[in-house]
Each structure stands twice: as structure tokens, then as C-alpha cells.
Length: 217
Image 1 (cartoon, rainbow, N blue to C red):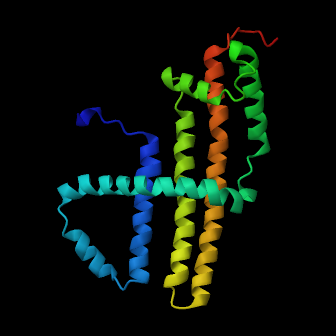
Image 2 (tube, rainbow, N blue to C red; image 1 turned 30 degrees about the vertical axis):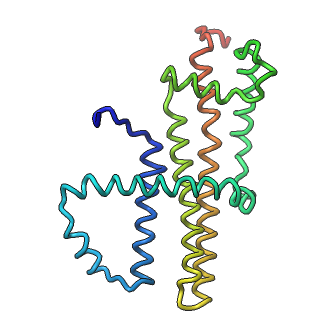
Image 3 (tube, rainbow, N blue to C red; image 1 turned 180 degrees about the horizontal axis):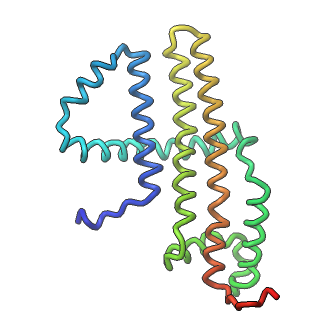
């Protein structure tokens, strides 16, 4: 059973790396605000057997990331979408390419579904995945998920620092830094999100188009 377990890029970026990052942030907070010293931290880590650590730690990071991911998803959908909407507008060249490819697919390859389905993305994505035509879009999707989670962690860290800081001035600065970092991560997440649809459409068309040598004139 174990050898049949498949690990995707989404598992690595959106779950494992998110859990690792969140753990590092919590550790930093414990050192800065909780009185934990680096010596105590390293002494505690050295007591864990290496064999257990190699198995348990990655699993723990992944499970932690899986817990964080839905909160980051809803926070992005219902808060960041409106609070930081000005940084999440797709680049014009990506929007233009997506529209161009989408219309080509709708007009030539949707058959009787043309006009009934406004966006062929889901069908094209399923087609590309089923035929294993490309994994490029999964790279974009996994990085989108990771940076979206980073945006959530940044805001959460800023809010926590606001209440844990010894002075209001320090807390407000930490909150402002967290919001600024969240804006950067949100912008990067939306960049990768805007790459996904064109990548799916390109893979679909490459498989569908009949390439005729020399037809370009």
C-alpha cells in the first residue's frame, strides 16, 4: 500500500512547505516572545531519534499544511480578494492569451457544447490530465497555492505580533510588515494563477491541432 502513495507538487508546495514555513514562524515567535532560547530549541531537537525524525517530521509538516490550507483558501476568497484586489489583477498579456486560446477552443472543438459552456477550462484541464499531455499547469497551480498560503501566514503573523509585542509601536510596525508581505505574496500567487489556464489551453491545442509542415507560408 505504501508504495502506491503518490505525492504531487500540490502536496509538496501547498501542504509540506506551508507546514514547514508555519512551523518556522511559530518557532520564531516562541524565541522572540515566548522566552525560548536557541540552545533549548537545539537541545530539544537533538533528543529526537534520526530515524523517527525523517519519517515523522515531514508527515507532521504536511498535516500542519493541510490544516492551514482551507483557512488560507477562505481567507483569500473572502478577505484578500477585496482587501488586496488592486494587486491581484492579471497581467494584460496573460488575459489576452487566455481569451484568444479559449475562443479558439470554443469555436472549433466544443461541438454542440459551444454556447452552452462559457468557460471550457474545466473540460480542457480534465482532458490534459487524463491524457497526461502536460504537467506545466500543475507547477503553476502548486506555486499559486504556496504563495496564497504565505499571504495568509503573513497576515496572521502580523496580527499575532500586534498583540504579543511589548510596545504598540512595535506591534503596529509588525502588522504593517505582515500586510506588506501579504500583498507581495498575493501578487505572486495571482501571477502563477494567471499562467494556469493558458498552459492548459496550449496543451489541449497542441494535441488537437493538425500541424502541417510549411503551412505558415
